[in-house]
Image 1: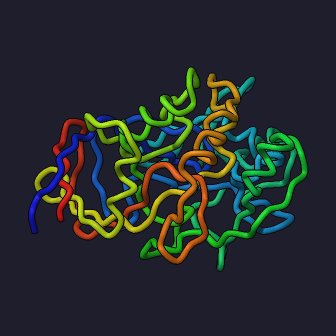
Image 2: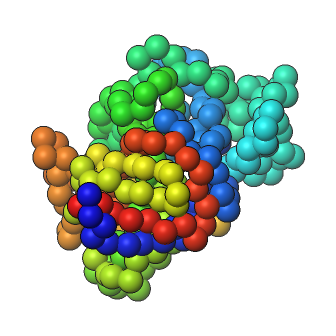
Length: 280
């Protein structure tokens, strides 16, 4: 295999509770289920049995106002207007149920055949995050080797080239990387949807970590929503819908895409500054 392109790891992110704000880290071990501690917990709606996800913003967008930070034994959850609570606290389900207005359980294992609702992004753009719109039922973790709370694959990558291109196409719009919820932000000198051409290619990071890109990342309504102190911004999704609506994989229908999903071929450590070699 020949090295054809080079990037560098600029940022690393993990999200200890699904659909809550994540935490930026400087280094991590990476295994078959991605960065250590990523998506280790999620809320389960007790009425429907579905996994709570901000992809259905009318019901779950308030989760993006919460933040989660992982420790070895537990996750510290910060909720607006309340004191932080630990995932191991006896009252955690009660507190999260009161906050979301739904009866929920904070789980560390997904239910069998776990699913979530994914609101149709174009309808959310048209009618707003508060509107009741059509949703598709999405089975989670299709490309993860064991039961998990990942939407599809264990790692989500985005390049600075893509972020620059979205900003160029959308004019003066907010393209803060936090809207896209990546695990890896890769620094590249170009402008353009660079990683869209990496499907089925191998990435070697640092001394031992090996990944394979398996699909583009179809964007849902989440980048348009408030994320903590980031205000709502529908322009991000509109820009992708107009300028980069492509099939995430050859056998999938076109969707607005930014970033790519990857699977782990060989586990290993990763840290900010690591060189990324894209193999041909």
